[in-house]
Image 1 (tube, rainbow, N blue to C red):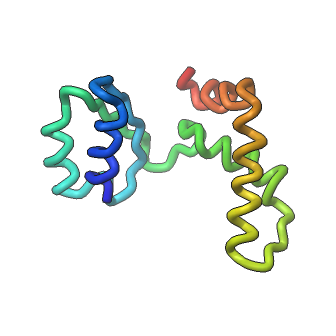
Image 2 (cartoon, rainbow, N blue to C red):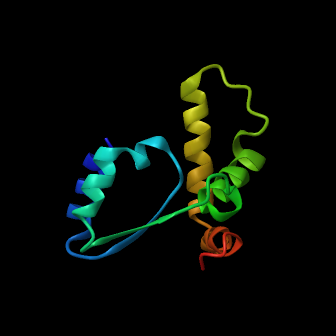
Image 3 (cartoon, one colour):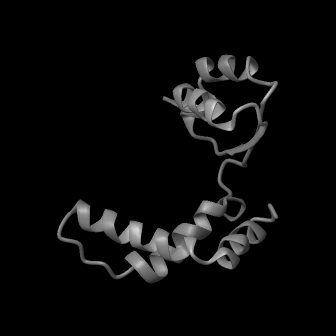
Length: 110
């Protein structure tokens, strides 16, 4: 799955290079993924995040903002209700570029 995603990402980038920040998910560290990554060094550079460092991971700030306003007190009737709340939160946050930049700044990536 990880390799398939990276192959599709490479097609989408159309020759551009990418710096990818990864956490310690076991799928990211498997032998087959490591072997594949060695063949992709011309366009892909991987930087690993520490084992547990949510403060360095911008999506953690995104989730925190969504939990505070969009899903924190939600009492869903089912999984689809959760999905709708997450989508609403994503749309709300996406319209606030300053907030998105703030997530990157908080993680010291911007």
